[in-house]
Length: 485
Image (tube, rainbow, N blue to C red; front, side):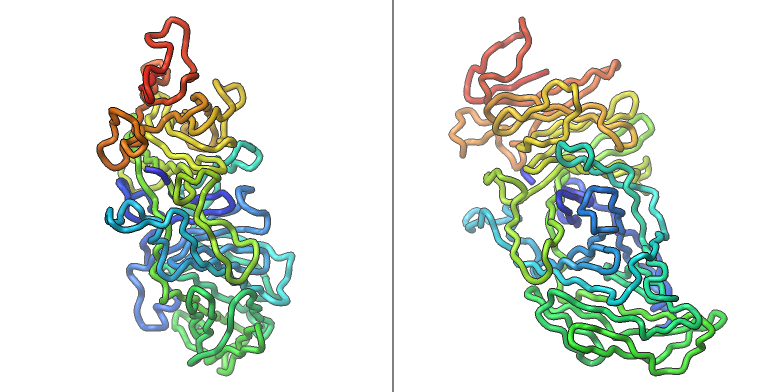
């Protein structure tokens, strides 16, 4: 079992739920949505909503918020949205665990993706942003050994509003059915002709039947024809309008008569009908609970980086320098309330290479302990812990979070110069293999006693695994031994 969950990072991640032992991603909430539905004469009963995650230093500074949608990721910047579009057929090449035995597997598959930047041309650069529909859960990011780049209590919302992005015009971004939506809210007396959208990185822009078609190397993205309306004492009145495309700049021309003393809403919804929505897997590996009945899950999730340049590019899906694996992944941990109806926190844990959890438990103070393995030399460890250095190959890691998941109480490497924490199979020419089933290579267990002492059972191939004086067995007796500490 080698490969994150919930929003991952590293330069930026993406997460979406696939098939896993425990389904981890519960970020798309079902609630009704209004404006467009009202105009159509009905209200949606099951609109899926995206979550916008604030940047608290875990990503590049130009990012204000980010969100995953059905076909990729959107990054909200000061005066632009950058869209990273995934391959139209998803990331199926990564799923080695679902391929027939007689089918060849591409070890380091390459994927074509495409980044398109939508700039609000001529917008005010000193505007403010505000959030709406704040969620009760939050994310934490413990990635890499530089604690200055860790972020905790990262808030999540469903709506971000750019106040006065143009003079008298707000931009409200939200979602519907996994599509990114953004409204221009034109205040009474404001001029809607200020709105100019400049697109960068696409192959081609054309207007077709009133829609904006954004051509990329991964397919066509469609921005529906603009919808403008006013609310007249609870009655929605549609206002005629259409796009005007001049080169790479898109304007919106209001042709219908409207009340200039009332607010005008313009709604250009971006849709991704050509996409399967298939992204990287999230694999569940362990679960636990505390004395209050809260539930904890741990797994791994795959990540995708923030696009450095716009336009088409290729991404080789590798998470680190270790070529043993097909893709990059970090540990992901989530805490739910006792009824499973609310996500209390969600956190990433990892370094520049790959790591995965094997077992989790909760101590008497509701602090979560994670046992796993890592290949990352910059795995987040705590000063003064048992071992702050990767010893070689893979090391066992033991990490303890505080009760809110916002800080590391302790985190350490444990291992020798060879691989620790991996149960090898017969393919590795290890006699007497204990690997019989899928994911047996990732077995291990962690336990706590009434005094909160931590006990670990795992395995090692190292001849210099750390031992204590007078222990039962002071040397490795074979290719792979069990270890207890």
